[in-house]
Amino acid sequence: MKKDEYWMKFAIIEAEKAFEKGEIPVGAVIVKDGKIIGRGCNLRETLKDPTAHAEIIAITSAAQTVQDWRLDDSTLYVTLEPCPMCAGAILNARIRRLVFGAYDEKYGACSSLDNILDGRYLNHKVIVKGGVLKDKSEYLLRQFFEILRRNGN
Amino acid sequence: MKKDEYWMKFAIIEAEKAFEKGEIPVGAVIVKDGKIIGRGCNLRETLKDPTAHAEIIAITSAAQTVQDWRLDDSTLYVTLEPCPMCAGAILNARIRRLVFGAYDEKYGACSSLDNILDGRYLNHKVIVKGGVLKDKSEYLLRQFFEILRRNGN
Image (cartoon, rainbow over all chains, first blue to last red; front, top):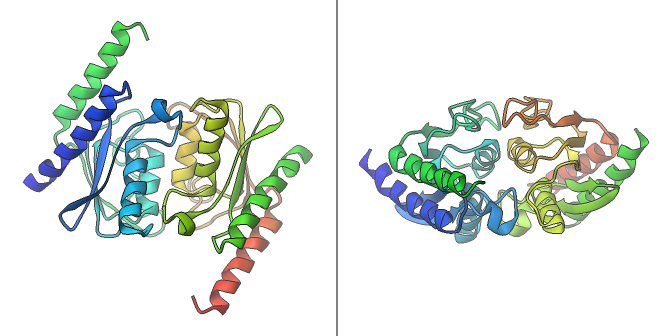
Protein backbone atom coordinates (compact mmCIF):
# COMPACT_ATOMS: atom_id res chain seq x y z
CA MET A 1 0.00 0.00 0.00
CA LYS A 2 1.49 3.30 -1.15
CA LYS A 3 -0.14 5.12 1.79
CA ASP A 4 1.93 3.14 4.28
CA GLU A 5 5.12 4.07 2.47
CA TYR A 6 4.07 7.71 2.54
CA TRP A 7 3.66 7.76 6.34
CA MET A 8 6.72 5.59 6.95
CA LYS A 9 8.84 8.33 5.42
CA PHE A 10 7.88 10.58 8.33
CA ALA A 11 8.94 7.86 10.77
CA ILE A 12 12.28 7.70 8.95
CA ILE A 13 12.70 11.47 9.41
CA GLU A 14 12.29 10.84 13.16
CA ALA A 15 14.88 8.03 12.99
CA GLU A 16 17.30 10.44 11.33
CA LYS A 17 16.84 12.84 14.24
CA ALA A 18 17.87 10.03 16.62
CA PHE A 19 20.87 9.27 14.41
CA GLU A 20 22.04 12.90 14.60
CA LYS A 21 21.86 12.78 18.39
CA GLY A 22 24.03 9.64 18.52
CA GLU A 23 21.06 7.44 19.44
CA ILE A 24 20.20 4.08 17.85
CA PRO A 25 18.19 5.42 14.89
CA VAL A 26 14.56 4.44 15.38
CA GLY A 27 11.63 6.76 14.70
CA ALA A 28 7.85 6.58 14.94
CA VAL A 29 4.72 8.52 14.03
CA ILE A 30 1.06 7.91 14.86
CA VAL A 31 -1.56 8.65 12.23
CA LYS A 32 -5.30 9.10 12.75
CA ASP A 33 -7.83 10.38 10.21
CA GLY A 34 -5.06 11.22 7.75
CA LYS A 35 -3.05 13.33 10.20
CA ILE A 36 0.07 12.78 12.30
CA ILE A 37 -1.05 13.12 15.93
CA GLY A 38 2.20 12.02 17.60
CA ARG A 39 5.85 11.51 16.78
CA GLY A 40 9.01 10.46 18.54
CA CYS A 41 12.53 9.17 18.15
CA ASN A 42 14.66 6.99 20.38
CA LEU A 43 16.17 9.12 23.17
CA ARG A 44 17.39 6.45 25.58
CA GLU A 45 20.90 7.85 26.00
CA THR A 46 19.95 11.53 25.83
CA LEU A 47 17.27 11.19 28.51
CA LYS A 48 19.05 8.37 30.37
CA ASP A 49 15.70 6.58 30.38
CA PRO A 50 15.26 2.91 29.40
CA THR A 51 11.62 3.59 28.49
CA ALA A 52 12.43 6.43 26.06
CA HIS A 53 11.94 4.40 22.87
CA ALA A 54 10.51 6.10 19.77
CA GLU A 55 7.13 4.36 20.12
CA ILE A 56 6.63 5.31 23.79
CA ILE A 57 7.40 8.96 23.08
CA ALA A 58 5.08 8.94 20.03
CA ILE A 59 2.26 7.30 22.01
CA THR A 60 2.57 9.77 24.91
CA SER A 61 2.62 12.70 22.49
CA ALA A 62 -0.41 11.38 20.55
CA ALA A 63 -2.35 10.91 23.79
CA GLN A 64 -1.60 14.54 24.69
CA THR A 65 -2.82 15.64 21.26
CA VAL A 66 -6.17 13.86 21.55
CA GLN A 67 -6.35 14.32 25.35
CA ASP A 68 -7.24 10.67 25.82
CA TRP A 69 -5.15 7.62 26.61
CA ARG A 70 -7.20 5.65 24.07
CA LEU A 71 -5.76 5.89 20.57
CA ASP A 72 -8.37 3.70 18.86
CA ASP A 73 -8.50 3.78 15.07
CA SER A 74 -4.94 5.02 14.81
CA THR A 75 -1.93 3.47 13.10
CA LEU A 76 1.59 3.49 14.51
CA TYR A 77 4.43 3.62 11.98
CA VAL A 78 7.88 2.72 13.29
CA THR A 79 11.13 2.07 11.47
CA LEU A 80 12.07 -1.03 13.53
CA GLU A 81 9.93 -3.90 14.82
CA PRO A 82 8.79 -3.04 18.37
CA CYS A 83 10.32 -4.64 21.46
CA PRO A 84 8.07 -6.24 24.13
CA MET A 85 7.70 -2.93 26.04
CA CYS A 86 6.60 -1.00 22.97
CA ALA A 87 4.33 -3.81 21.74
CA GLY A 88 2.70 -3.75 25.19
CA ALA A 89 2.29 0.03 25.00
CA ILE A 90 0.54 -0.39 21.63
CA LEU A 91 -1.92 -2.75 23.36
CA ASN A 92 -2.40 -0.38 26.29
CA ALA A 93 -3.18 2.49 23.91
CA ARG A 94 -5.68 0.33 21.95
CA ILE A 95 -3.89 1.20 18.70
CA ARG A 96 -5.55 -0.60 15.78
CA ARG A 97 -2.73 -1.09 13.34
CA LEU A 98 1.08 -1.34 13.46
CA VAL A 99 3.29 -0.84 10.42
CA PHE A 100 7.02 -1.36 10.90
CA GLY A 101 10.11 -1.25 8.72
CA ALA A 102 13.08 -3.45 9.60
CA TYR A 103 12.59 -6.77 11.40
CA ASP A 104 14.40 -7.18 14.73
CA GLU A 105 15.43 -10.81 14.95
CA LYS A 106 16.93 -10.43 18.42
CA TYR A 107 14.27 -8.46 20.22
CA GLY A 108 11.21 -8.09 18.00
CA ALA A 109 7.95 -8.97 19.76
CA CYS A 110 5.53 -8.43 16.88
CA SER A 111 6.71 -11.06 14.43
CA SER A 112 10.36 -12.16 14.80
CA LEU A 113 10.53 -13.79 18.26
CA ASP A 114 6.84 -13.69 19.07
CA ASN A 115 3.73 -11.66 18.28
CA ILE A 116 2.23 -10.43 21.51
CA LEU A 117 -0.29 -8.39 19.49
CA ASP A 118 -2.13 -11.52 18.29
CA GLY A 119 -5.09 -11.14 20.65
CA ARG A 120 -3.91 -13.19 23.62
CA TYR A 121 -3.84 -10.06 25.81
CA LEU A 122 -6.88 -7.89 26.61
CA ASN A 123 -8.72 -9.59 23.73
CA HIS A 124 -7.17 -6.81 21.65
CA LYS A 125 -5.69 -7.86 18.34
CA VAL A 126 -3.56 -5.40 16.39
CA ILE A 127 -3.19 -5.64 12.62
CA VAL A 128 0.54 -5.95 11.92
CA LYS A 129 2.44 -5.26 8.70
CA GLY A 130 6.24 -5.49 8.60
CA GLY A 131 8.94 -4.69 6.08
CA VAL A 132 7.66 -1.33 4.82
CA LEU A 133 10.62 0.69 3.46
CA LYS A 134 12.81 -1.66 5.42
CA ASP A 135 15.91 -1.08 3.26
CA LYS A 136 16.09 2.57 4.29
CA SER A 137 15.61 1.73 8.01
CA GLU A 138 18.17 -1.06 7.89
CA TYR A 139 20.64 1.19 6.10
CA LEU A 140 20.36 3.82 8.86
CA LEU A 141 20.84 1.20 11.58
CA ARG A 142 23.82 -0.38 9.79
CA GLN A 143 25.44 3.00 9.28
CA PHE A 144 25.00 3.80 12.98
CA PHE A 145 26.59 0.58 14.21
CA GLU A 146 29.45 0.91 11.71
CA ILE A 147 30.30 4.35 13.10
CA LEU A 148 30.14 2.93 16.65
CA ARG A 149 32.56 0.14 15.70
CA ARG A 150 34.88 2.57 13.94
CA ASN A 151 34.97 4.65 17.12
CA GLY A 152 35.89 1.54 19.08
CA ASN A 153 32.64 1.27 21.08
CA MET B 1 11.49 -13.42 52.86
CA LYS B 2 10.62 -10.69 55.39
CA LYS B 3 12.73 -8.16 53.45
CA ASP B 4 10.43 -8.41 50.44
CA GLU B 5 7.40 -7.73 52.61
CA TYR B 6 9.16 -4.71 54.08
CA TRP B 7 9.74 -3.11 50.66
CA MET B 8 6.34 -4.14 49.32
CA LYS B 9 4.73 -1.97 51.99
CA PHE B 10 6.26 1.07 50.30
CA ALA B 11 4.79 -0.06 46.96
CA ILE B 12 1.40 -0.33 48.69
CA ILE B 13 1.76 3.28 49.95
CA GLU B 14 2.20 4.27 46.27
CA ALA B 15 -0.89 2.24 45.31
CA GLU B 16 -2.86 4.11 47.98
CA LYS B 17 -1.80 7.40 46.37
CA ALA B 18 -3.25 6.16 43.05
CA PHE B 19 -6.45 5.14 44.86
CA GLU B 20 -6.86 8.63 46.31
CA LYS B 21 -6.54 10.13 42.83
CA GLY B 22 -9.28 7.87 41.46
CA GLU B 23 -6.77 5.75 39.54
CA ILE B 24 -6.65 1.94 39.48
CA PRO B 25 -4.57 1.43 42.65
CA VAL B 26 -1.18 0.06 41.61
CA GLY B 27 2.11 1.23 43.09
CA ALA B 28 5.79 0.42 42.62
CA VAL B 29 9.20 1.10 44.13
CA ILE B 30 12.70 0.20 42.94
CA VAL B 31 15.29 -0.81 45.50
CA LYS B 32 19.06 -0.93 45.06
CA ASP B 33 21.68 -1.40 47.80
CA GLY B 34 19.02 -1.18 50.49
CA LYS B 35 17.58 2.13 49.30
CA ILE B 36 14.52 3.18 47.33
CA ILE B 37 15.85 4.81 44.15
CA GLY B 38 12.52 5.24 42.32
CA ARG B 39 8.81 5.15 43.00
CA GLY B 40 5.58 5.62 41.11
CA CYS B 41 1.87 5.00 41.06
CA ASN B 42 -0.54 4.48 38.20
CA LEU B 43 -1.48 7.86 36.69
CA ARG B 44 -3.08 6.82 33.41
CA GLU B 45 -6.23 8.91 33.81
CA THR B 46 -4.57 11.89 35.51
CA LEU B 47 -1.90 12.22 32.83
CA LYS B 48 -4.12 10.90 30.00
CA ASP B 49 -1.19 8.67 29.08
CA PRO B 50 -1.53 4.94 28.34
CA THR B 51 2.13 4.42 29.29
CA ALA B 52 1.79 6.01 32.76
CA HIS B 53 1.71 2.76 34.71
CA ALA B 54 3.32 2.62 38.17
CA GLU B 55 6.31 0.57 36.95
CA ILE B 56 7.14 2.89 34.03
CA ILE B 57 7.07 5.94 36.30
CA ALA B 58 9.20 4.15 38.91
CA ILE B 59 11.73 3.00 36.29
CA THR B 60 12.04 6.48 34.77
CA SER B 61 12.47 8.02 38.22
CA ALA B 62 15.08 5.42 39.26
CA ALA B 63 17.05 6.03 36.04
CA GLN B 64 17.05 9.76 36.85
CA THR B 65 18.32 9.00 40.37
CA VAL B 66 21.27 6.90 39.17
CA GLN B 67 21.70 8.92 35.94
CA ASP B 68 21.88 5.74 33.90
CA TRP B 69 19.25 3.81 31.95
CA ARG B 70 20.75 0.57 33.29
CA LEU B 71 19.23 -0.45 36.62
CA ASP B 72 21.29 -3.64 37.08
CA ASP B 73 21.24 -5.24 40.51
CA SER B 74 18.00 -3.56 41.46
CA THR B 75 14.66 -5.06 42.46
CA LEU B 76 11.29 -3.74 41.36
CA TYR B 77 8.41 -4.16 43.84
CA VAL B 78 4.93 -3.68 42.43
CA THR B 79 1.52 -4.40 43.93
CA LEU B 80 0.09 -6.04 40.77
CA GLU B 81 1.67 -8.42 38.28
CA PRO B 82 3.12 -6.36 35.40
CA CYS B 83 1.44 -6.14 31.99
CA PRO B 84 3.45 -6.84 28.79
CA MET B 85 4.55 -3.18 28.49
CA CYS B 86 5.87 -3.03 32.05
CA ALA B 87 7.49 -6.46 31.83
CA GLY B 88 9.25 -5.25 28.68
CA ALA B 89 10.39 -2.09 30.47
CA ILE B 90 11.87 -4.27 33.24
CA LEU B 91 13.89 -6.08 30.55
CA ASN B 92 14.96 -2.83 28.91
CA ALA B 93 16.19 -1.48 32.26
CA ARG B 94 18.12 -4.72 32.98
CA ILE B 95 16.38 -5.02 36.36
CA ARG B 96 17.52 -8.18 38.11
CA ARG B 97 14.54 -9.12 40.22
CA LEU B 98 10.79 -8.55 40.20
CA VAL B 99 8.57 -8.97 43.25
CA PHE B 100 4.85 -8.46 42.75
CA GLY B 101 1.74 -8.71 44.93
CA ALA B 102 -1.56 -9.69 43.31
CA TYR B 103 -1.68 -11.91 40.24
CA ASP B 104 -3.36 -10.47 37.14
CA GLU B 105 -5.09 -13.34 35.42
CA LYS B 106 -6.33 -11.22 32.53
CA TYR B 107 -3.24 -9.24 31.63
CA GLY B 108 -0.27 -10.48 33.67
CA ALA B 109 2.82 -11.13 31.53
CA CYS B 110 5.18 -12.39 34.26
CA SER B 111 3.38 -15.52 35.38
CA SER B 112 -0.39 -15.61 34.72
CA LEU B 113 -0.73 -15.51 30.92
CA ASP B 114 2.94 -15.80 30.06
CA ASN B 115 6.36 -14.98 31.51
CA ILE B 116 8.23 -12.79 29.08
CA LEU B 117 11.01 -12.39 31.66
CA ASP B 118 12.12 -16.01 31.27
CA GLY B 119 15.21 -15.26 29.19
CA ARG B 120 13.79 -15.53 25.68
CA TYR B 121 14.42 -11.82 25.07
CA LEU B 122 17.86 -10.17 25.17
CA ASN B 123 19.20 -13.27 26.92
CA HIS B 124 18.14 -11.42 30.07
CA LYS B 125 16.34 -13.49 32.67
CA VAL B 126 14.64 -11.75 35.58
CA ILE B 127 14.07 -13.53 38.88
CA VAL B 128 10.32 -13.36 39.56
CA LYS B 129 8.46 -13.77 42.84
CA GLY B 130 4.69 -13.25 43.01
CA GLY B 131 2.08 -13.11 45.75
CA VAL B 132 3.96 -10.95 48.28
CA LEU B 133 1.38 -9.18 50.52
CA LYS B 134 -1.14 -9.95 47.82
CA ASP B 135 -4.15 -9.78 50.16
CA LYS B 136 -3.58 -6.09 50.81
CA SER B 137 -3.09 -5.30 47.11
CA GLU B 138 -6.15 -7.31 46.11
CA TYR B 139 -8.20 -5.61 48.82
CA LEU B 140 -7.29 -2.16 47.47
CA LEU B 141 -8.16 -3.19 43.89
CA ARG B 142 -11.45 -4.77 44.96
CA GLN B 143 -12.40 -1.69 46.94
CA PHE B 144 -11.64 0.52 43.95
CA PHE B 145 -13.78 -1.46 41.52
CA GLU B 146 -16.63 -1.69 44.04
CA ILE B 147 -16.71 2.11 44.32
CA LEU B 148 -16.69 2.36 40.52
CA ARG B 149 -19.65 -0.01 40.27
CA ARG B 150 -21.51 1.82 43.01
CA ASN B 151 -21.06 5.03 41.05
CA GLY B 152 -22.46 3.35 37.97
CA ASN B 153 -19.25 3.35 35.93
